[in-house]
Image (cartoon, rainbow over all chains, first blue to last red; front, side, top):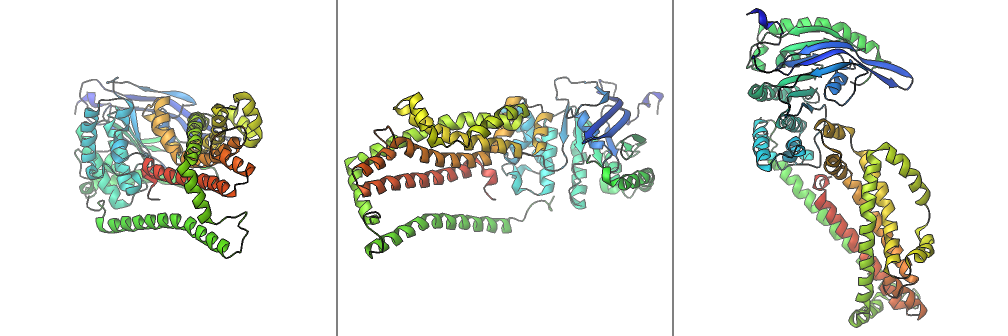
Length: 280
Length: 271
């Protein structure tokens, strides 16, 4: 290890890097007559190619933070600066929590959505979408409509849609939270396989500590409402990873335990706050 | 992977069952009006109802054949159909555009909603004299009446249809940087289509009512004219033929629109 590895997030190539710099970001909502602070003065630098996890109790403002990065919300104060290395690519694509694939489009049309919006030639769309449907095991369901799919398959479509759009940054908002554990583990492995092909910057929100440790390079722990940055933890596991094998690694348990001890107080705090907890 | 791939057997069986249920529904829909006609014929022949006001279906059928052979029936039906077609088209297109804009943009809703609320309850038949004054006795006034009748249900349902669309889909559109036009065509329009179709069905029904009324006053062709004229010459059977044709048109439109709905909203067909 040399001294120039101080930016964290593992080894980086020397080529152009899209870095996300979040400075003193604050977001407040007015709900009736209460002013609620969802995100409170978060500053953060996320290096290019990092698989960045954000963990926190329900209602800690992590989704709000992600929506600001996605451009779906504007911050009350502070700023997000993203250095782009490929200005011709879309800035970010989001995998939403819950059902977000269009019921009126087939699996193929859903996965092709971003490319069609950008008016890419049909031949290119066929190749790219074909590739990602193949990687997500959806090739046989290309012509199916979402109501014919299971929850796990719908989330695969959502992942294929985001990857096919080839953005610089992938944003994932608890994409697997509605799935059962077996499906979730399968999708973790699939996601890592697809991610290994491109190594795009990913910002991934979760409330699952296991998910954070299995997938991430770095983990940000957020406090309960108002959401602040509590701790930043590096995940030591090398890539490519096998999600199941990781669990046998003694460092896995230690890491999970360390994160849990940071989180415990926050979760309790969030629960004690019932009346005021906001969905995030 | 293998967990995800559904066992094709139960699904195939389910689909077959769903198909036969569809067919059963269709057969029932055709059989119920036929049953009613049969009942009518029997009661007239048994002398249970006054044949001067309620001539037997067989006699009405005879008149129908006569009117069909003379071509009178087709001229009048065709005249009404043409007015209905143009009226519906002229009513649906702006209603759809305006309704979706209302659903998408709050300011548009704030502007249009009170206007709709104020004008919608006015009975369309009550504005017929005004329409005749503005558009004259020709085709334009009939078409305008149909258009006005179709306009409201489509507008109201399109606006509601867009507002029913889950916000997350609009977020997806925004995240994928869809332009306003793209949001309109890829999200708002298809998303509101189920309710829009309901609006069109209601609107076409309203159009049929209004075309009959409009043709009774100041028209020299059409089914409404035929019915009114039959009253003036006291030809009760002709009146019934006119009513029957209107009912038949209504039935055919509903059937055609249901088929159209199955075809353009395949993603809802299983529900």
